[in-house]
Image (tube, rainbow, N blue to C red):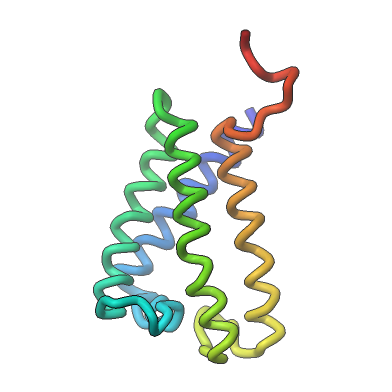
Length: 132
């Protein structure tokens, strides 16, 4: 039950973040696109927003492939981590992260997101929780 609540909360968070990519926080998300990405930063933000909305919906509603959805989202969180690093290294203000200390603290939240999705989708299971 608690796992499902946290899975749904993360799904809603992804839908909210994806919506932000497409609208109210679009400029803020551009601050996280590293300069080495060979695409227009605005296009990256728009595409990642669509992906985040789809991931959020899948996390909430797709039961049959829940483990695969969890693995995909964890991989996504790993792939966008360089954006968080770029925001810190280049001192880019976004989302109220206007000091190096706050940007550094944000870096430590990414592994939490990865573990959260792996746990909430049963990728990380205790041996007692596995079905035989």
